[in-house]
Amino acid sequence: MVSFAVYGKGGIGKSTTVSNISCALSEMGYKVMQIGCDPKADSTMSILNNKKIKTVLQVIKEKNNNVEIDDIVVEGDKGIICAETGGPTPGLGCAGRGVIVALDKIKQLNVYEKFNIDIVIFDVLGDVVCGGFSMPMRKGYADYVYIITSGENMSIHAAANIGMALNNFKDRGYAKLGGIILNHRDVDREYEKVLELANDLGTKVISEISRSDIVIKAENMNRTVVSAFPNDKMSNEYRDLTKKILVDMECKS
Image (cartoon, rainbow, N blue to C red; front, side, top):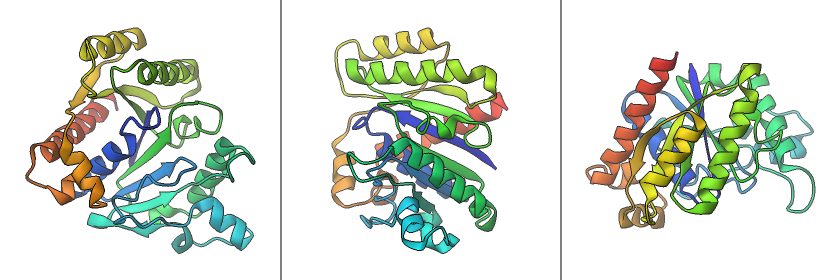
């Protein structure tokens, strides 16, 4: 089994990208599990046709820790196994701590083994890289981290913070930085700015995703682009990105 985490600023298209990668991997014959690590718990909704599932933290609270696997995972489109860590009520408690508790529970229940998972993808909020949200970077969770950014200043700033966090952890056996995914917003000098960031972090831009209305159309249908429009050029962009990640991870292993 191999695993990777995708980080990025809120609203950058991270969950959209991750869900399309999950679908592309499933098409290729891999058994995939996607884990949303965001208090909003909406990472997997396009895979589940807009169904919002109970989060791991909700179930732990309701069942006093007597949690079973079927309480926290749901099978979605293309057989993708989905889970959401969840978080506390806004303003109450630490969302990062919630990620730690939830991922520990998933591991304790041997979820990966039960479903014979080949690839785990952690979809992680990247505006703040505190101890909890850095959990997927830690040894025993993600093997690699990919950062999604546009050329917008706030997105680049968030990406830089994530990259610096990874560099701070590199001597602890944490996940390796796989590279940067440029999700275009068509701002001035976009590629040049993101390439400069990649150079500063000692990594590369592994792929680019075009700005396209078809992504919004798929989201309005509560589906991924790969499922809703399998023959569209955007679906092929997501498939190409997926292949590049697989090749990148193989090269680094």
